[in-house]
Length: 395
Image (cartoon, rainbow, N blue to C red; front, side, top):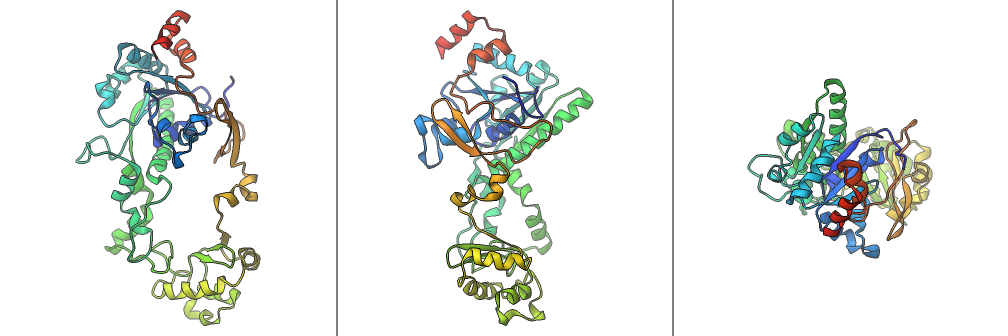
């Protein structure tokens, strides 16, 4: 099958499981790379876990979300044959990605020092919870834990309430993005030097790095910002920023002059030069509560028509149901569908980045476990039909 996308020709040996590794390799696969997903005999951990306990036809919706455009082979990496097959694939790979606990790949004989001898051009990326060394080396690394250690939850929620972690796996998915940009940077470096290299990523550093502005502001101020009591969603920002109730839903109000917004919605109390700022901290909760009272008097659509005509920074607050019908979402082709061999039609997110000359395409659904063993063994390991059958009989 012809590959599409700008990374056509790159081969990725993907040993990763769960979210941050698989989403990174899915993005590489979406851009045309050939992703060889090397799974344990029982499969990626995510095959046995799913958001909302959703298992259409027995397949995890979480696994399906992160594993399109890949081929699967199931290997026992503790067996001699499993290690040999893995090494045959790695020998022909451009990129290797793994997110075992630090030291596991080395104990299997598949660590970077060994693999760079096997394949000097290999870009080898390891991803962990907290890093490859240090006092947290033996701690379990997971998104919630990394977010919590990063300090970020103290930016969310209301004054006096619990810190709030994001519902999306922020540390996981940020690490995915950092992995993609880093391995592609290393591929470019290889094109200049002819040599591969090792890359290390981790959830905690990703979460901290993502909050560069918030942490830099803290380092200047020297104390934690105080969260809003009325629900302004960023403790560093003041009125009128935030979400407000309307008569039939919600409206988002961005960085606008309090005075200008007051003029447009008819709140005379704040129509003075004293409220010209777009970021009033001192009495932000009182201001927000007063604005909220006014916003409740009209529907979201009525407010948008009025506010957008006056160049006020605002938007509707979509539910998922509303988002998938949003005209801009449709225009951007951000909801796609493809056929899965067991589940049938899968609807999922599209490609966030577009390429003019090498457009992406969903070539393959998330693979069934070991689905591509025959193809992989013949293409990467030189197996005969008899050897393939022998392998399949053992899995």
